[in-house]
Structures are given as C-alpha cells and as structure tokens.
Image 1 (cartoon, rainbow, N blue to C red):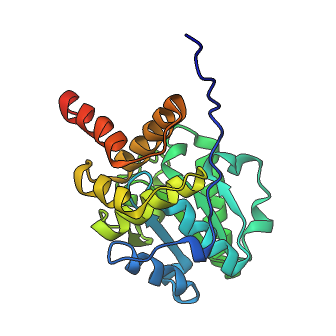
Image 2: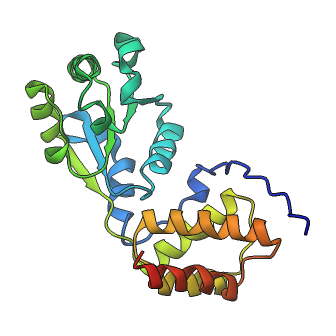
Amino acid sequence: MAHQLTFDLPSVPALGREDFFVSPANSRAIAALDGWRDWPLRKLALCGPAGAGKTHMAHVFAAATGAPILAATALCNADIPALASAPVVIEDVPHIATDAAAQRALFHLHNLSWAEGGRVLLTGIGAPARWPLTLPDLASRMQAANVAMIDPPDDDLLAAVIAKMFADRQLAVDAEVIRYITLRMNRSFAAARDLVTRLDALSLAEQRPITKPLAARVLDNDEATGA
C-alpha cells in the first residue's frame, strides 16, 4: 500500500492586537501593558504559564511603543546604552539563570533604563520571585517589578487560543469542534498546544479534516494513557 506523504510545515503565528482575544484571565495584564507610561519603577514583569500569550502581548506592546524585542539570552551581544532610553522588551528572563554575562547585561540595562527614563517589559514563566537568577542585585530588582499575571485560562480564552493555534497552521476548524475539544481536554495552555500539534499531524497523515470523531480519538487516547 502506498503511504500518503505529509509535510510538517511550520505555523506562522499572527501577533497583532486584532488577533488577541481578551478575557477575564488576561484582561488585567492587557490593562497593565496599556498603562506603560505609569509603570511603577518604569518596569513590568509579564508572567504566566507556557503558551499563555506572553509573546503575543509583548508584540502588541512593541507595536504600540516601538519597543524592540530581545531574548534575554541575546543581551550579551546587544547595544545596552542604545536600548536604555526607550521602551524595550526582554523575553524569557528565567532562561539566563546559568548565564552570568547575560545577567550582568540585564542588570546594566535595568539601571541605565531607570536613569534615562526608558521602560522595560520583562517576560517569564512564574513570578519574578521564583526566577532562578544568581546575580543578587539583579534578582532583587526583578523582584521589585510590578507583576502582570496571566491567570489560568477560562473556557472562552482556551477556545480562542485553540482557534488561533489552528489558524496559525492555516487549518479551518469548526467552532463546534473547538468547543468540543475545550470542554474535554486538560485545561492548560501547554496541553492546548500539544493537542493542536497532534491533531494537525493526524489530520495530515490521514488526509482528513479535523472533526469531532478525529478529536475524540486523540482525547480518548489521552484519557487511556493519563496524559
């Protein structure tokens, strides 16, 4: 029997403000970003679980303020003085927990930004008090940041996140199928991302659209394996 060839094409996320769904789970974080001119100490830590929309929010903020977006791991090669006088986004701060040079660069950026009137948006999983930074002065300054926390997803937000993940993969999935998935899956952003990935792969392999029966097969397998 001939096997159907499948192509695992990368998804391209839509990161505009019009693509972002606001719900009670993230509305306070959005309001905090919109109030960037009045941030206490001119910095904000945007926190939440993996897949919660931190990067999307960072792009919305960047579009509104002209802020560049840098991974924390790239700070060693950045022009820190050039970044300090205007808004800037530093993503995934916990990723530099074992990178002393990057931590020093972020500490330098923090201090210069404060002196020159810039704004720093920092992102990471969990609150800054739990970020495993080893430079004490940097850790204390991160912990002093005002925190915008993205809460666990409500039904509407989870459905919107799943719909966006399908759309990013150029998959048209009926709203009733998305609601069916939402009500039966493990309720986390990470679970949503994993489920969409597996449904996309199964749909490609079998050359079938994503329907309730197809979703049920994946969800039933999760229940059987305890996933």
